[in-house]
Length: 235
Length: 235
DNA sequence: CAGCGGGCAACTGCATGCACTTTCTGCCTT
DNA sequence: AAGGCAGAAAGTGCATGCAGTTGCCCGCTG
Image (cartoon, rainbow over all chains, first blue to last red; front, side, top):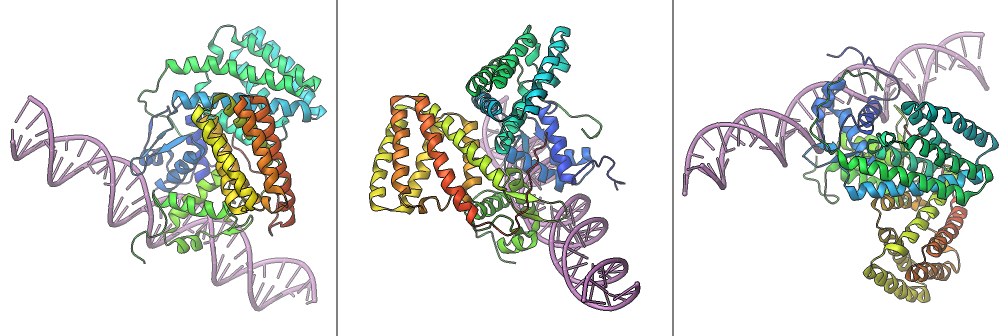
């Protein structure tokens, strides 16, 4: 049946499925432990099971999905222990990025980092949590890029994705916004000074604090059965 | 055609294919840039194209192969730059592992590490390069495990696999064996002392030296299709 | 002789079909 | 009434088929 794939943006069908399903996991729309039925997914996205299967395989290789042979796939369930290990890794990775950034950022990168960071102060004053969240992501991405190391960049971004479902409410905690900005400030200052060790330490502390806040939050809401009802608009 | 799956080990056919093809890449049997033809691979392993395709997809997600839509898959070609970034990452990751190991290894783990390390001295005297290579891998794996952090373990092992093709000849260099052992010794000593910083530094230095040796080697034999493609990480 | 273009062969991408495995259900046994 | 066990239903795993794309070869033209 199917006319034409209405939502072709880029890449093959499999790529689209990886993004579509991956996004839904990362954004928490699909919750850990939730069953990923090949047939339903295929129907929902109006493709055959083959690309869905391939996508699930790739997501499994990325650690976002867990596959039990002959027993279907579920959104990866991370134990408290594994979650902690990812947060800890994140802190270490960010520390590396900050340390490298202090040593390697071009003057252009340093300038942008500082400017963006300063302008984000406004968002803190306004209490614009959503906008600040966006800036926050940008800020950290700048650090990852500034390290000028493609592989560390990959690992860091990957780890961040896998942690995303557990971090979304981090700014809900009162006063978190201002504190976050101050921590960013410490990182930026150290980088501008070219002090790699200080930058690394500041970044590690920053992430560690976020981790604790998020971990507390994550403990609160455990996955429950959920369904997926939503039109198939590309992300 | 032929009867039942006689070849490899356990798991689904796709898993077997991932291991089979992945091994051949990691061991250098398939060289960077080499074309991975679905039909040939399917015939070679006596399966249909479907599991081969899924395997290639997963290997692509792991970064071991590169897929060009509608144009087939090749063994991932890493640029000198990306290779350097992986070696650097490896040094950082090993440093973390060593640092954590110094703080977290159980007494049993410490004991085994020391014992195995000491007994490997014999292999150095004998100049048993192949056996030492095996011990070397074991030694590093102990460090990764000793860090007691599942996610860092994953990243480290993954990075090591991707570097494997470029490290095979690291012990060819004269005197490398003895030097390697001494470097291991520095790591072990620091860990036994519980000195995380020293352990981390020793590990980083160790890996860096190996990296340089390997990089020199890798430069010598550039594979044919040497195009430069940066892996694009989805966001 | 170089350049160009059409057609063919090879290959990838996806859909569909079938076999096998797991899981659920309801009936039968004890 | 509980346990368990057939049989069916659901769902996964792989093979095969077909359509679309890419790349190549070869003849044609200037």
